[in-house]
Every structure is written in C-alpha cells, then in structure tokens.
Image (cartoon, rainbow, N blue to C red; front, side):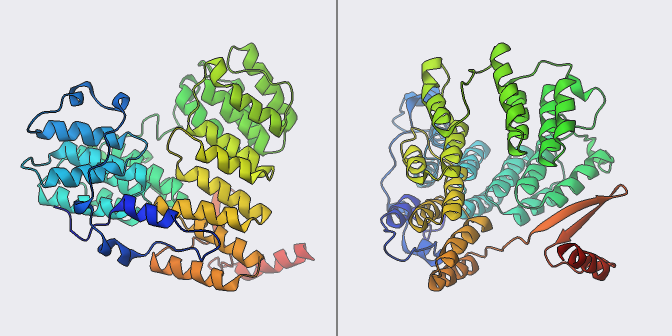
Length: 447
C-alpha cells in the first residue's frame, strides 16, 4: 500500500479553499501531507456514467482487478481525477492486486491533477510489482513526470529506458519544450533527426518532425510549422505556409494563423482571415471586434451547435482579463461545467498582476496551490503583485514558499541568430567571450 502518511488530497483542498483573502495566504506545506491519511477517507462518488466503460456499470459482489481498473480509468477521465487516488487506495486494501493497466490509469490521473508526489509513490509501486520492463507503462510514467513539472525524473526515466518508442521521445520533447527547457528539447530532437539512435530504429514522426519532404501535404505538420514561425515572429513565413498548403486546412490551421496575426498587431488581417472562415464553411462570421462581441459569440456557441471546451473558456477568460473585467472572468471560471485547468487560473493571475488586483491574484494563486501547481511563474506573479503594493512581508512569504517547495525561478533568456548560429543569452549573462563588447554596445544603444 501507499504510505499511511499520504495526504487526504480532497481534504487538503477543502482546507486551503476555506481561507479568505483578508488573511495571510497559506501555501502548500510538505509536512501537512503527513498529518492526514486517505486510508480513512470515505470512498469518492462514482464518476459520471458517460465516462465509464459499459462493463463497469455492473458492480460485482467481489470486484476483480478489471473492475477496479474500469473505475480508476473513469476517475482519471473525470472532472476530478484526484479521486482515482482514493479508489486505488481502496483497491490496495482489497484482495485484488494491481496490474500494469491499473498503474497506467493511476498515472494518467496524476498527470491531469498535476500530482507529483503521487507520481513518485506510484513509481515505487511500479518497481515493487515488477512492471519496470513494460515500455508503455514507463512511457506513461515519463509523461506523468513531465506534465507534473518534474523534468529531472522525466529525463532520468528516459535515459534509463533500454527500449524507447516514438511516444517516449515525444513525451520528453514536449515536456522539455513546455517546461522552460526549450534548448534541451531542441537538442533531443536533433538527436533523433541526426540518427544517433540506430539501435532502436527510431525516427521522428509527424508529431515531432516538421523538416520532411512534402510536409505541406500533412495538415498536422503544416499547423506545427505555422505555429512555430508565428511564435518566432516570422508571421509572413507562417502565412506563406498557410497559403501554400496542398492539404485541406482544418479549424486548427485557421485558428493558428488568425492568432499569429492578432498577437503580432495585425488586427485587420486577422479579421479578414476570420471573416473568410465563414465563406469556407468554418466558424461564424463576426460583425465587429470588441470584448462584448467576443463574449456574445462565446454565449452563442451552443446555440450554433458548438460544444464549449476548456480552450473556449480560456479564450474568453483571457479576453475579459485583458480588458480588466476580472470579476466577470472569475465568474466564468467558477461557473464552468468542466474542471478548469491550471492555465485558466494562470491567465487570471496574469491579468490580476497587470491591473494590480491583489484580492483576485490571491484567489487565483490559491486555486493553483490547491491544484498542486509548482510553476515558478505563478509565485513570481503573485510576488510582483504584492511588491507593487509594497506588501514586503507577503513578498517574503512567497519567496519562503518557493524555497519550501523547491521551486526554482527560471532566469530570463533570449535567442539571437547570427550568421546561421543561434546564441543563447541569460539575463546578466557573462559567459560569451565578447560579453564586454556586447554590453558596451547595449549601453551605446540605450543612450
């Protein structure tokens, strides 16, 4: 069984959520995990029937491993994936023994709930039960570590694998790219591309590779290339790929190109492209581009047969947040019929920082703490909000919380391409051999 020091995660969330903004914001305390036990917690309510496999609707008098797996899988796909942990603990007290599928479903729940400690404990169980040779399970474990932000363990898992499939490479590359280590992600991708892994006969597929012949015939790769050019600031190159596609454009293609024009200040071009979507039978045509119109279109989605997902909610929260309508953004998140992810609260936290709303920043930060998020940017944003209001004691508490949770602030850096070579510079970097001349030139430009 898992250690009896294992925390009652739902109880921990309830305790944190009972705090009020008028009191000091209490951050995650590792010692608190030893004060409660999920073993004594009542079993959670069953997940929605629509999320459960048909076979799980029949309750056996003596559940078998497959029955437990079906329930844990249902919880993992539900709006409250952390309930899979409670179910697993109940299973561990039963005569049934977990199999590799049990561990896989549990890890997928951990990945969705950002449950790093639970992932570590399941790793111990994978070793204990002798499932370490299962390539698919090890890939799932690697992916869970990466999504929880534990890139060191994710990389260690990858390096220790005697066999790797394309999913293993994709999981680590994606984790590094989204976890503030894009340079390492590029190096790993180059390792695949340059054929340094002949013993596994592995080459990048369309998910990892966009440098292939006739890539304009593959919509997935085209979308990735458009997004890459846009994020690198090459909007015209992105549009050239968009125009030259020999495959059918899908909704992601249009959205990516419209976003590229929008975030780089070409609102007119973004609107023209958005209007042309309607003529191609994709999406509604807007009358004007305002915050109110965006909210109205959001509310009309279901009437037009479009089901709202978390990305739609994220877009409207971002729209309201940029306009300073933080209360409305908060109400939309709270009214969501689906489980809001960390990105929604991070969006609200960022908007609260821009508009100096301390109370809303604390609300958003509290929600992130409850979800187990340990992204350094969440702490830095809250610290900046406090600093702007000269609440230095609170700034100190945030820094102490980062220290207790072993959260490292990722230093800012920039990439510069010169004569075909890419140089990486950190804030205040002095590693380049010509750093003195570089700073001298910067001072001249500043003057």
